[in-house]
Image (cartoon, rainbow, N blue to C red; front, side, top):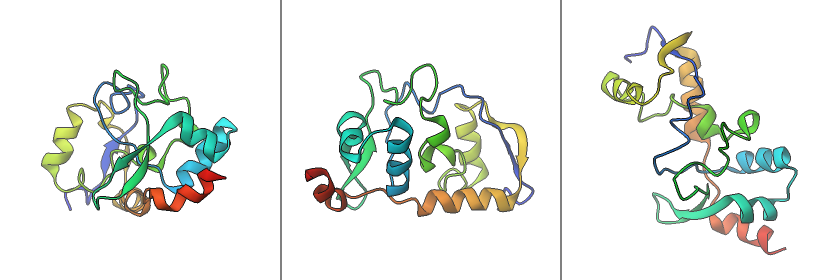
Length: 151
């Protein structure tokens, strides 16, 4: 792997990954639980206020955070309002599978993220752990949550 000797990354909290461009922040059951606790809301309340259903790769609908009309994340307000409880997708950036595919992908992402190639050195083992967390953090499918939301 191109990162056998590790990679430098420290979040600069520039919010480039949270704003301006459209995107999807998929929520797992763990993410939803943590966010509900953070905002002291029921699942139903949180989903109604902060979430939307989007089509996923397997053509099912999954839970995703909403975006504002300017494409900012619904949780962004001069910084992440849920930073300590942010979704795994957010907390594992930039150690996502497709970014770690090769040095070219990493370099391309570094053009938009000032934290990539700066800051602390992450070991290969730490990177692989973050990658694993990202890959195992599967979004909630609509069918899994419908009965709970109807209550």
